[in-house]
Image (cartoon, rainbow, N blue to C red; front, side, top):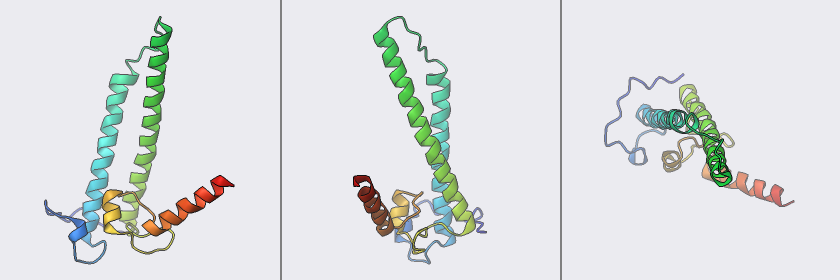
Amino acid sequence: MTNTSNVTVPPDYDPKTDSGEFMNPVMLEYFRQKLIAWREELLKESQQTIENTLQGTELQKPDLADRASAETDHALELRTRDRERKLINKINDALMRIEDGEYGYCEETGEPITVARLDARPIATLSLEAQERHERMEKTHREE
């Protein structure tokens, strides 16, 4: 079990230029903070949607075009929130991998995932090579 919460990340820290050990305590804490901030942002947006959009949505409009437009907006908002809910689950999974000491390693090969990939997509569970292989397999099976 990895405890990084007592580690300080310098304000100008860039994990891509960290020449230390892969997934050292500072790097882990950097990604932990990044994931938590992302999750908080998603939760805040979701709460705002509930307060502003969904509670105030009046789908029973007298004009058919207005009603259709409102229903479309409502459905789109719900789909967006569902995608964000799934993303929050992936963020939580990534935070658990940090705690378990498994963060940053490919689930398929066990090899390190590049820091640049993790910085761009901190919920990544596959190395770029494994992800590309996975996508080729999906495409092949879809075409059959």
